[in-house]
Amino acid sequence: MLGIHRKMKKWTAQLLDLPQDLVFDLPRVTMIGNMQIYIENHRGVIHFSPQLLELRLSTGSMEIRGTELVIRGILSEEVFIEGHIHDIRYVQE
Image (cartoon, rainbow, N blue to C red; front, side):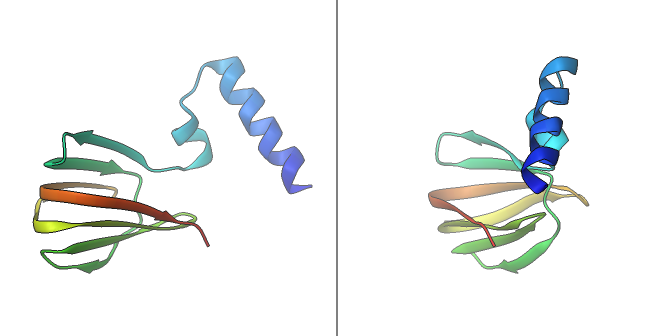
């Protein structure tokens, strides 16, 4: 039944020309080189240090690893990070 629900959402998104991240509640990640990253649709910060940022997502979590990481801006569903980004990992639960 879950597969049918997902197919209906996908079909509706395509028919109405809606962004997939909006329909499926997925994170939207915008990266500029390896120095800045902007993430929308997160559910909160799990852990932050200058080497690791871990964000809670609607399904799983996201890990951003690097050096000299700094949170430049954070809102309820958006976060802007600067530093030297080495690795981004999506962990699905």
